[in-house]
Length: 96
Image (tube, rainbow, N blue to C red; front, top):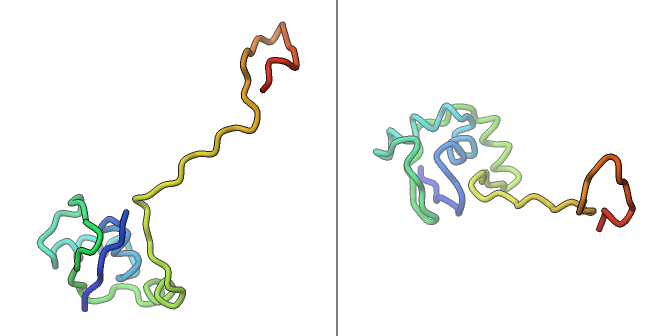
């Protein structure tokens, strides 16, 4: 069996998604001649070793979910920005 890498995925993401455990990343790396820290490219095809935890892998497969920890959302800026913060001179104009 094989799987195709999505954007932002690393070996640990693929291992959790396809093999059911993060520990499977080492077997996945070995099966593909990679180090666990090697970057993956979208569209790269990886050979899958024996499934480790079918219940976890089945959970993601049943929902069509792909694990992707490589692309992170940017933090939301605060609603109010403090322009000048001095405890002794509180003024409502200090806030945007």
